[in-house]
Image (cartoon, rainbow, N blue to C red; front, side, top):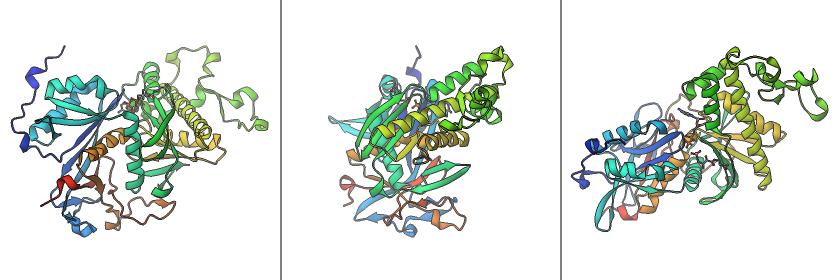
Length: 420
Ligand SMILES: Nc1ncnc2c1ncn2[C@@H]1O[C@H](COP(=O)(O)OP(=O)(O)O)[C@@H](O)[C@H]1O
Ligand SMILES: CC(C)(COP(=O)(O)O)[C@@H](O)C(=O)NCCC(=O)O
């Protein structure tokens, strides 16, 4: 048992903590996702690293006498198996006085972090013992949906399709967003039919998810990490492992719509090879595994979307895709193939942070104010990705599109924060 007493952080002056520095954690089976807000006084950075006054982008520093807290929303990931790295990071921020918010509970000030995912339950005592931090738990499915809805409504250049090596951004009109199927590919996979804000049903799930790819990959290729596995898969050829229709028919089977190149049986070629694991190229195994898991989940997602009211939009979240082109391409091809071109897979730039963002958003319930942001990509002639508008949106665009590690944003104060 780890001795936590020597590394606990002393918090002498709760009032010195900025109660507007909210943090949220999503502690999953494989990864911990952290979203936190840092203030940047009076100005924020646009996509190109220039400082921009809030007034320049049409936002008053004080709107209707409510404060606007401008700054950045940061996104960080840690391995759940290396939770100490996450604890160290939080500790360093606590020491700087820039982590957590305090909340008055029965006359006492408590340090609170919003937390979701299984680890919000499993590790609650660890955080309490180490830092005196209390997890304010948010339901995982609710958080995923809230995070996805927020990104889809507020962040331009967030959703995109990926086909034939082309990424096309899609700006979905808020009034035309629902219903959609959210497929969260984490360690396992949850499929959620979303019909409105806070209105959803987890309609299905499968244990053949990201954890399966990584677990099998580690066993079969001895890769050390997910990145290793992806790297290997780039160089591999699954046809050395998978049995194709042409391997069985000698040609295509066009009568039932199967091309010669279609995988008839994942890993099926191995049966006749009479080889040992070491005789296969690990790159080929990685490629074959990646196709197997991605094809399978694309097919299940499509069937579930059809089963639950012919949902036209299937949006894939979770850290699995990691904007990895081959994964997205395979999922897109799967959805295209099974839907006979009627449905397109959609992906999100902040795909892994839906749960953490949703938990973060839930601070709004406690009067923190609304998370907003600024769309600053118009500021430079250097084009940031332009959304392919399904329908032009009229309202203010809310969140700056930048890299995936941080986005400029602001928190628009609520009644409880009203200036006098
Ligand atoms: N750096 C990484 N380390 C481990 N797995 C990763 C990494 N990046 C992406 N993945 C993939 O994403 C999955 C975890 O996705 P995530 O949405 O974070 O799920 P969870 O909430 O269960 O941790 C892993 O199982 C793996 O397939
Ligand atoms: C249990 C979970 C919700 C946990 O979420 P995760 O940490 O995998 O993101 C998820 O792994 C899941 O939905 N698994 C599939 C279980 C099933 O429906 O068979």
